Each structure stands twice: as C-alpha cells, then as structure tokens.
Image 1 (tube, rainbow, N blue to C red):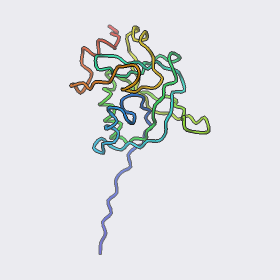
Image 2: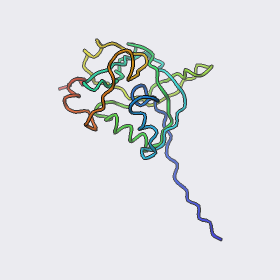
Image 3: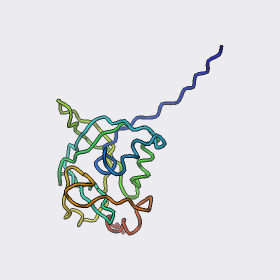
Image 4: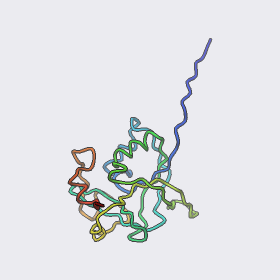
Length: 172
C-alpha cells in the first residue's frame, strides 16, 4: 500500500499588533478568524512600549494610530501570529501603503510577569494632517466605548479620496 503524504511549504510567521477594529469583540475581528484570509493565532495582550496618539476620525469613526512617538498613551491591543496570506489580507484591509503604513514596533506583553517586549508589525498613519493631534487620544479602543463614536463600516473596500483628504497631509 502506497501512502501519499502532502507537504506544504511553511509560510513565514509574522507578529502583528492590533489596537482597533481587529481586536476580539470588535467589528472587524472576523477578518482574523476567517480561514479564507489565512491563519491568525492570538498570542497575548500588549501595549506599545512608546506612547502614541490613538484617535477616531472620518465619518466612519475609524481608529487611527498616528505615528507621533512620545505623544498620547501606551496603546493597548492584541498580538497575533499570522501567516503570509493573513498579513497580505491585513495589508489590503488597512490599505497599506496608501492609508496605513505597516512598521515594526516594540510591544510590551501586558499579561506577562516579566516585562517581555516583542517586535510586531503595527499599522500607523504616518502622513497625517497635524490637526488630527487635537482630537481626543485613546489608550484602549472599543467601538462601543464611552467616546460615543461607534465604528461604521464603509461601503467602499478602501479609503475613499474624501476620507484620505480628511486625514492625510498632502506633500505637494
């Protein structure tokens, strides 16, 4: 009897820190659990080692982590290990590199007895309009939070030009 064994090439494993609608119990978490998008495994809760401003903007009340190190809070979120396919699908969801920019950052595990730090991919808004820094900063995003700005899913798959004009600084 001949047994045929199928081997799959191992995908790269990436650590991703999510701080907004991709977290458990948030509106886009289904992206992380849908096997058609790839594999995502929850690792731990964490927070940014450095302070950043986490804001809510656009008519859809989207959370944005502004790349302004030293301003804001140590933002709380979740760390996942994802495969190449999931990372690619997250890039599409986050409209990387047109809207968010994926960058490596130090994340401190908050459910660890030691101060364990992991390098994770984080989606930042880097080319943002300075007036976004005048919006209230959050430490921990929840769509149903006290801020009263529930996330509204866009009918468009990506940021529209109108959305982009509201948040992105033109460099012309």
